[in-house]
Length: 461
Image 1 (cartoon, rainbow, N blue to C red):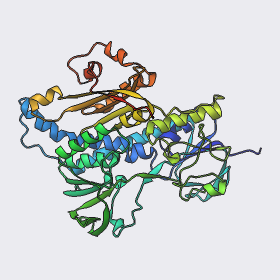
Image 2: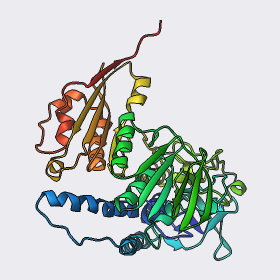
Image 3: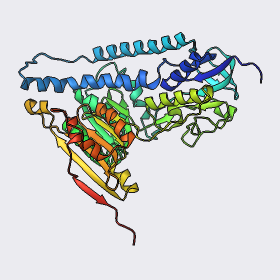
Image 4: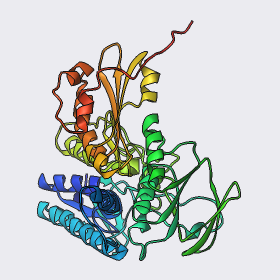
C-alpha cells in the first residue's frame, strides 16, 4: 500500500465526526476533517443547542404569569425577538469555536471546504480544487430537513434551518409536521406569542412515542394556544413570505406570515461521490453500514445521521467513539441502540426511555401499567391547570421495568436518570423499595404501588 496524505480523513464536522477526529489525533494519527459550513454540525449550529435556548425563552411568559400568585408584580415586561436571535447566535458561535479549539489542540487539521470522494482513498476539496488521499475515510455529513413536497409555492417555506435566523417574529405561522421538531417549534412560537397552527397528516402527533404521551402533549400544546389540525395536508402556498395563504387538501386556507416545514430529515449524501468510491446507499439515500459502522468499502466508515440509524447527537458521538476503538484501538466495538433515552422539548416537555406500551404489548404476554397524574406543587399557588404524567411499563411475569414515559416539567432530566435503571433491567420491586424524596415530582416514580391496568394477551386457540 502506498503512502497517504492522512491516516484518517473525516468528511463532516458535526458531533460524531468531531469526536472521531479528535480521538484519532490524540492517538497520534494524521487527521484532517473537512466542513463546508460552521464546525459543530446540526446539534450545535441549527439543532439541539439553539433550540433549547429558544425553548427557555418561550417559558418566561408562563413564569411571569405564575409569579403573580407568589406575590410578584410583572407589569411592563416585554419581549424582543432580535435580542434572542442575536444572543443565541453568539452562544452558537462560541460553542463552535470550542469545537475548533479542541480539534486543533488534539492535532487535527481543519479544512473549510466541501469534500467529495473521487475513489476509495481520494477526496477532492472543492474550495481548493485539489485532491488528498487517506488510508481511512469517515463519512459524517449528517442530515438536512426535507423540502420535497410536490406542491405549488413550496419555495416560500422555511425549515428548522432558517427558524433560528428569522429577522423578525411572525405574528401568524403554520408549522407542518407532527414529529418532535414540529412540535417543539410550534411550542416555541406559541410561547412567545405567535398565533400558531400545527398541521399533521396523521391522526395524532409524535408517532413512535407512547400513546398516553402523544395524547397528553397534544392536549397540552392546545391549552397553550397551538391550534392542532390532524389528518390534514398542505396542498399549495400562495403569495409571498410575510403574506402567505396556505391551502389544505380539504379546501381550508390560512393567512400566515411564515410556513415552516418539519416533515422529517434526509441523509446528506447527494453529490458526495459515494458512487465513485463504491459506497452503497439505501433507497432513502442513507449510507449502509454494518454493526461497526463500516460501509460496503473496507476502508470507508460512516457515523451519525447520514446512516439513518438513531438520529440523536449522543448516539452519533457514541458511534464516533466506537469507530475509533474498532479501527485504532484493536477493540471492535458496536453501539447498543436499546433503551436510549429521548426528550421532546415541547411545552409540556417529554422524557422517555425503553418500550412504549404498544411495543411492549407486541412482545410480552402480560404487562402491568402504572400511571400517575400529579399537579406540580408550584402550579397550585400559580393557579395553573397543567398536570404531569408519569407512566411505567412493567413485565407482569418477571417484574422487570420495561419503559418509563413522562410529560411535564424537567421530563427530559428525569428520563436521563431513569435510563440507568431501565438499562440495568431493575424490577418494580426495586423502585418500590426506594424511599421517596418529598416534595418532588420524581417521588411518584417510587410510590406508584398499584397498577392502573393489567394487560394479558389472549392465547391463540
